[in-house]
Length: 164
Image (tube, rainbow, N blue to C red; front, top):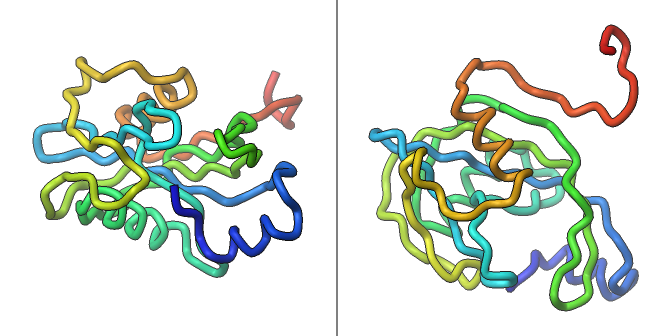
């Protein structure tokens, strides 16, 4: 899997040590309400389409770019549905990362869903009641986006003011 040039350069300095990175993910819905997913090339699991923001890139622009690069699908971000921190991810090459995840609900605009780069083994639309095997974190992000309340959910690890 290719990584952005800025990250490859950073990795020459820090090796496989854990990095804190900004990431975006898209819960893309087509006109039938199906969800777009990609099967990752690095671990073979189905996941949301997304990736790392480039330095200085606006998150909404990044989610549009990632969808187009990975799937050939042009999307329009409708809402930011979740701000969270991913679990620590151990990649097969030894790299470790944790992401500030910005999950967007996106509307399909155009394009034929397909594998469009080397990051995916497959790309497919799934009915909401027939999703493939997904981890709990991904299912939660999809569920919040499908609720479509127009509110952003913020995860809290500890006690936040006004929350019990």
